[in-house]
Structures are given as C-alpha cells and as structure tokens.
Image 1: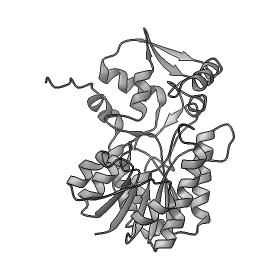
Image 2: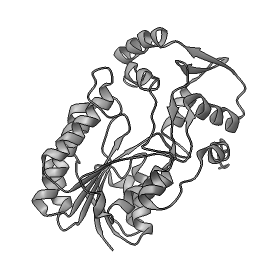
Image 3: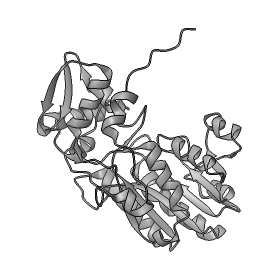
Length: 302
C-alpha cells in the first residue's frame, strides 16, 4: 500500500484516478482549492488538504510523508490561468517539492503530440513542462495519452458544442488519426505506474486498442444521441479566423484557433498494443463502449 499525493483530483481525468487509487487500497491525499469538490474522496478515506497546486508552500505541506506524487494539473487553453503558470511552472514545482520531501517518484500526465512547435501552443507548453520536470532531477515518469473518453466531459463537450442549427460541424477534414482510451483505463495505467520503477526516466505514450479518425469518434456521439444532422466540414482557414475572433471576445469560446490546428494532426501512441506491452492487459475498445455510454440519460424526476 503506497502513500500518494494526487494533484488535479477534481478534474476530468483526476476523478477517475482518485477512485482508482482508493480502489487499490492505497493511502490517498489530495490537494484542492475547494474541499467540497473532494467530498466523494473524503468519504472513502482520502485525506483532503486545502491549497493551491501552483503554490510551492501548499504543495510542500501536502507532500509531507508521501511516497509518490501524481500530477494531472494542466490547462488546455491559455486562460484564465496561463500555459506558462500551469503547464510549464506546475511540473517544475512538483519536481522541486518531490526532491525536497524525499518522495520516491513523480508521475506527470502529459499529452501525445507534446513538442516544441510554435504552431501548437498547447503542445509546446506541455513539452516545456516535461523539460522543467526533468531539470529538477527527480525520479519521474511521463505518461502521454491520446484522447481520453468518459461518460461526460472532455471531447464530449466539444461534440455537444459542434451541433449548430441543422448541422453537425467538423473542424477541417475530420480525418486525423487518433487512438482514444477510456478514462477508466487511463486511470489504471496512471496508478499502476507507481509500482513500475523500470518506467522511471521514461516518456511513455499510451492509447486505446483502435486507430480511428476524429470523424469516427464524432459518429459514435451522433449515433449514441440519435442525432441526424448533415455533417458540415469547415476548412481550417475558414474556421481559424472566426475562432481567433471568438477567443478575443469570449472567455469560453466554442473552439480556439490552437484547438482547430491540433485536431488536424494525427494523435497516435507508440503502437496499437501500447498499454498491453507496458502493463500486460488490454484496454476496452471505445468503438463498442461509446455508442452505449454516450446516450443522453433523462434526468430523474424531482
């Protein structure tokens, strides 16, 4: 049984990781700004520490006595918190704290596609964060995932926003190849990494057991929701300009120019067997999962 500090426990992936840690019988500590959002973890025995994951003092306090730190802290957009503050400085803070308190390892969750490229601001920020963690000299493993799917949130929000009037809007061609993985399986990989010292010092790219296109995943959503609308593929140059305008005018635009560009790029793991080769088990095929789990449930009557 390990003592684990989880940063980002109330986020999209973090909720799955927190429960997976508790399912495994580990001692979980979470650092959160709003303790009410961590109530479900506290009920199950997790220790809740109130603080800011970007404040070194808060992280240091929360990390006292833990063996492993898992960081899921990241932002996909450069607001309201910046890429620099979260995606770049965050991993550096985690690494420095881990060394100071004597933690055995850090697991940093990143994204496939992370690289130094000015055309992709988000991917560049994730790459820079990976570099900052490495510079601290801490024993760390970086897990890069393809698209993570769950019953709510994530790419599902993008699809819901893409239903505009009589159209189902696809940014660009929709033919970029992806290797989606279910949140449950991604969480299992993250938790199992702490017991695999052979992965320390490595960047591991992980995805599900299928290679599909962005349009394929969108079709799963349309099928599950029984949405029958004409698909409208908007060329990238035509979409990028209004996306930039919306980003300038709105705090939460439907899509940003950086997201439009990222959706056009293949997002594939090291291989179709990336999870089984590293962890010895096969993840669920999203193609059979999504049409069932993306069905919109009716709200219970009050």
